Length: 197
Image (cartoon, rainbow, N blue to C red; front, top):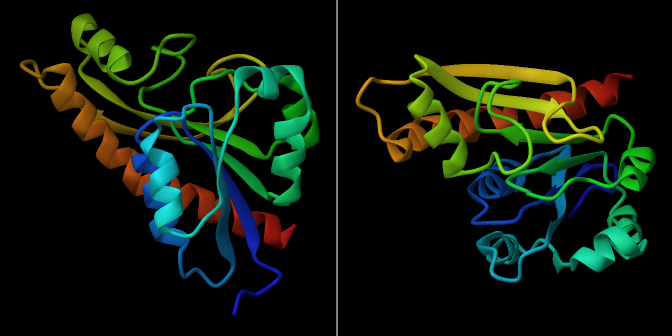
């Protein structure tokens, strides 16, 4: 039986949702934390199917519903989230969400911010830019979300090497391992910290 006092995570994802999958797996039988819902702006997002596999509500929304109405905000509120996790979600979060859930929205970015952040910097675009720049290391940044792309306060950065002969795809695979390892840990720590406050 579900404990009523579990902390709730709401995930936003636009694509395949492998980070969403890691959260769904990690918290499936967690005593204090659960994934309450997954929202997506993309009807083809595999993330929606991943949520359904775990019997987690999967909700689809349009650009107009997200920016032009309060429909999505009210739906999210109905799940009483303690933390909203952007796991490969590509749209800028509107101000009304930031006001409704202050300091409770986080994002995972597949590079070492502040480099390689901002609009259009997602997925393979990021890794291509890192390889082309000849950087010796890359990694992930988990950060709080504010009104600008990839500009919120850092929570965690973890590093991995960039090898001289790396392709963007090889680097992407290495960075993804970091994402899958650290995102559930950070989410868990943040929610347990809230418990103590």
